[in-house]
Image (cartoon, protein in one colour):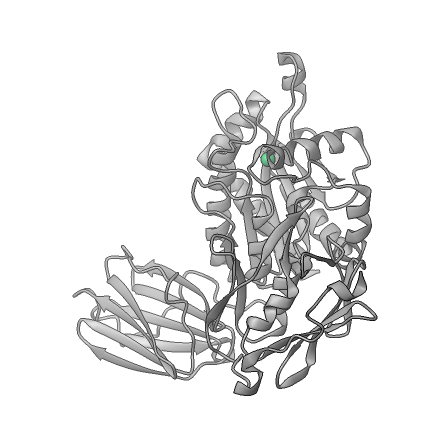
Length: 486
Ligand SMILES: [Zn+2]
């Protein structure tokens, strides 16, 4: 049996072509399939990445993935062992690597995440094409626009200090950057500030530029570097305001410490998955509305905030933490509403919010909530996906739990404290601990927050009201501030 696995040594043809991995973009088709619901890819096919090679050691049944030019980048898999060694550190795998049909199957999600964190550039999985995709790392990670009476401030946040020049030939103001990668495809283009009409972005190999098309309500434009050059505040002054000191933009531009910068907001459910349903409201609508308000609130406070969904679309529970890791989140907050079955008296009694972290459920109530929140996995098209985590999965998660559970606990405590100041906190609150599927695979501190009971008429009314949603968003942001201050 041991010799049946033919490719003893897999060497990539482009190995001799030099270290091409740097900032190029590309894709490679990788055989993929599921093992009991865990998506897997053929590690041998990763040799198709330029400069990468996979080496198979048949005696020890070990595969090493290496990158030309950087001997420290090495991922080691052993057949039958549900752990991988990534740059010397051990990470748990949701699936033991295995040989089958001439391929060496390894779990896709942690492997793509490992590539993404080890190699320059951004690595992701294109599920439709079945291809591993990589692209140059983007340097611009956030942009916010704050109009005021004096003009409009556009804050640009970069991963590092950038070199820039400005040009202003009405009606177009241009910022040109040396050696900067812009997220050209995802940049918002239209603004309705009254002063800026359009934003354009051009990416060239060695430079990039952002252009702002402005109207007659712009006098002068100033650019102010902050945060040691990692943030640029572009201020479009109203005519006659130019000579004044440039006012601070509405968002607190103070940079967060690197420790806590990018917050991933995960509005629960969406699309065909409504979540729990109250008398009038649907969970998916409340979570999205609160998520959007929370994003705006966090950006005001100087965080980078990303949402796993920003409209009424269906995202699988697996994709949510994948996105979070791809965006290199520092904190993951999943937003949901609780619900309870029963008669009106029981529904009227049961209310309040609750914060959960990833841990084996201790109470029956927590188990019931975990079942409900994980329910959609069953009904989705993903074959063989599990309803609850099996004991084996729990063991495999141990490492991840140890790494992040203390931090997640601190974060949950902070949320419980700040949410305790809301209207919803009148009854029932606190931190529970249940194994929610959505939190699995988030390689960062993560909390699932049940905002309140949609099955309780008073809670529902509050949760569905703009005032209630504003208050909740502000309190969650307070919780994040508190967690960060610790
Ligand atoms: Zn939910």
